[in-house]
Image (tube, helix red, strand yellow):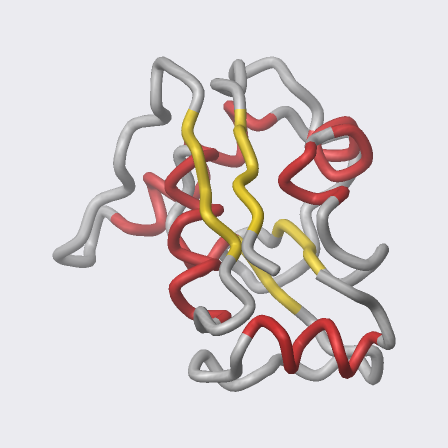
Length: 131
């Protein structure tokens, strides 16, 4: 069943841990299935400020063609369609947070990364959860 998540604009001083535990963007998925990562690929610490993470990603992306988009000033709505793909979902989640898609890591129960073309319904099924 399709659902829409409304993600309010996230301030630079918000902690990653608060975001991962309190945001409807993360609560809509099984615990541990969505993780915010740093440019190095390591999980972002829960006490890291979102603004610091945005700066790290902007610095890491300076040498690449696609810069990080600015964080949205207003709430963003994300449609979570069971027939949609994980890759598209990742892009929309990251955009709502003012981060590149690489900053969002969706993980299966065995900690592997799903194929970007995996359907969201299949992702939930692998977790034994309903979307």
